[in-house]
Length: 169
Image 1 (spheres, rainbow, N blue to C red):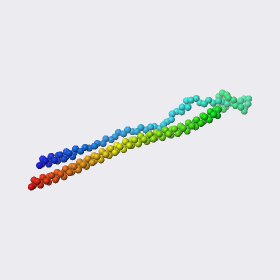
Image 2: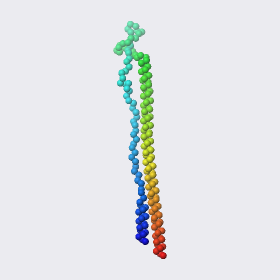
Image 3: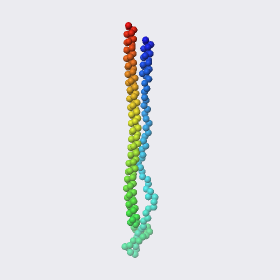
Image 4: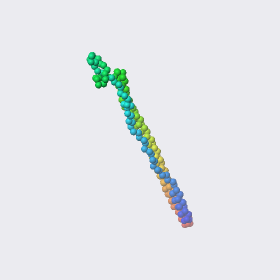
């Protein structure tokens, strides 16, 4: 009977220790790629020839009139009105559009950076959920194991008392 009791204790202890434990390995989440701010390219019109002006000077015979001359003699630098208006209009347009385009590109870069951070946060939340699941599962297995050991101990006490009663009779 003592051999049976020892064998029963050994079987309970061995079977209780066979519960599997999950192990959590921390993730390796890559850092999101952050785009730098946009720097506009150099002005392509800077490489082009400047507009060709013409120079004017007073007519020596009639001071009321202006005549076309070479640059060193000229007093006034002039463009034809239509060409001058086009140049001014184009410069104003380019100045305004350059500021707006830089702002637009920087907004798109910020949106892309926020999206990559959101993806990283989502990946981290999945890993935290996995870690919590592993912890809860392991805690459940430990409590179950402790419950089984307590039940086996109570069973052994009851069997021991029964054996003592049977021996006493």
